[in-house]
Length: 127
Image: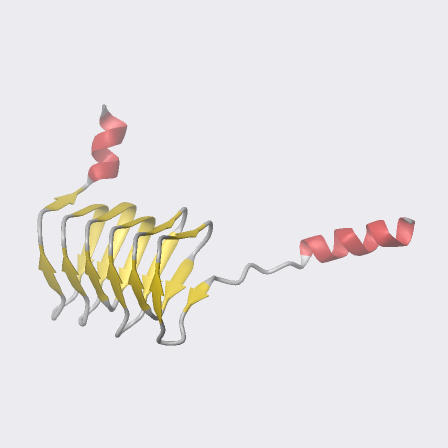
């Protein structure tokens, strides 16, 4: 019994979180929720949410709303985006929909069409 407790304590200190990945260049239908950092390399018809950050790889697409702490995208999103901290649009990124974020990083070559509201976290903290 003591041996089992030692093993559990040792393993507990050496567990690494692996980021969930929706990939394989497949198409998914439905809403997805990541409790941690999520990485998408696919086409999703549905909403995507995370308690942490979402990374959308080049060539990926989300047809739905995205809500997360932060977003880094090289792909395209057709829907509303809301990030409490930051959004980064790389050179191949394309967003068609309203975007709300604490901060925005927009690289040359990125496309955005919609309503933009930046600094929402600071506004919420001031009220």
